[in-house]
Image (cartoon, rainbow, N blue to C red; front, side, top):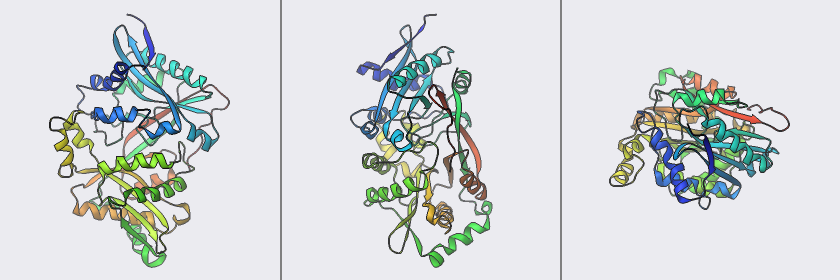
Length: 386
């Protein structure tokens, strides 16, 4: 066999190969959900993705002969490094054939590029940030991935586990919740929820499409406060939020987007729960034409699952029962909406408080993902979650 060559993406043809590889690798998979090709190109665009306002990236292709056999990105999030006073680099967009030579070659090339940027370690996979598709799936292969969840065949995890110098950094858990079944919830949650407004003067309201951008600023308040001590956290800036608000417009459902606030209007907590549009994307095969656009526009009648992407409360209000109020509201919505269950997360394996809350709601862990690191600089501590 010819050797594996690693080359950077430089041309439109290279970018097309980078985008198309997973469609070829997973063409016969009953689980993998093809994203929209147009969306992938926009996401990878250095001109259009807000990540590139505070980050750099190199896209890499692994080629054997005339065949692309793998891909990987190497990227640096300068905002992350400034916030944490670190010199981390990242890798992402991991796709490989089941070939023992491909992943090591890609990782070595990514490391070389990151060393040139002054990084002292490489963490991933994360498709730019931990708020995008992150980790390598190692439990839950038989389940459909939900929106912004990666899916990998089992050999990818095996290749990562055997890769030289690639060590576990953190595991991410997805919890299944059947939110139409109140009997699985601990009674104390309902008691706490009932007291939120009468005892603490905090009310819950739903976001609207018209006010979504302003409410995303409220989300930023909560996120940059409640998640700030979490492993892998990177603060949002205004450009990130502009892009995030545009993405949310495509999946917005007023029943599942909620804010809690004081009588004076101070934001207390936010929950952003997204209908699982992967159920629609599966039928579109990565294309808007000829009928994909119609399927997407009529998605509401096709989706019966949700993903709770963010649910958080500012630390100074975490004693008030606001989280319980938002949990109960999810159960209330399941009684009147087509979506009767879904998944929450990811949640860090070290986040004991949130994992206990999922157990209290009758949840079960159904998917696990692993994030890796390769360290070549000083120190190897990955930190602890709050």
